[in-house]
Length: 140
Image 1 (cartoon, rainbow, N blue to C red):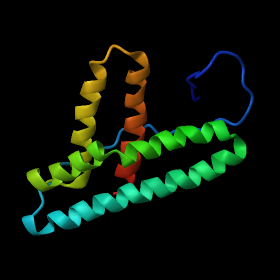
Image 2: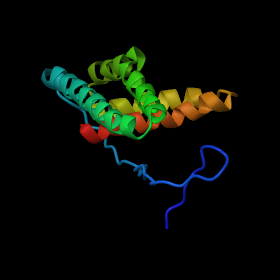
Image 3: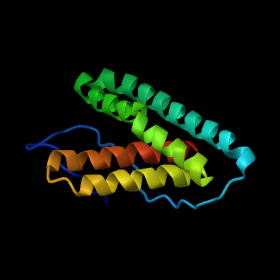
Image 4: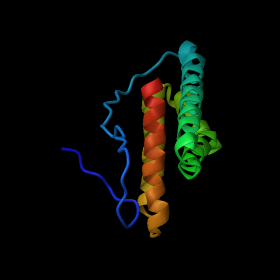
């Protein structure tokens, strides 16, 4: 049986959507110097694919309720964030590691920052970031 997490008070009747929040098993792989730019390109393509998937989901969500599609805008903005993408690319280049490991390390850095914030709203953004990063990893 699935359990839900309420996002607001009251009763709602409608379709339930299950988000795949399963843990991903990421292995660290060292890459050769001559394949670094290929790995960076693979990462950029995964980010772009994830953005396109979110845009498609947004189109479907807009037909249901426009207010829900705004959430997907937030996720897309996270992928447009230079810090997330640039930090990951820098890790790939500097540490000569695979993209999956690099973005996981970047996520861990941000997660630690969010955990030290006393604002519950901002702490909740950590979950949004994890969801977006998992989407990118699945596309790698």
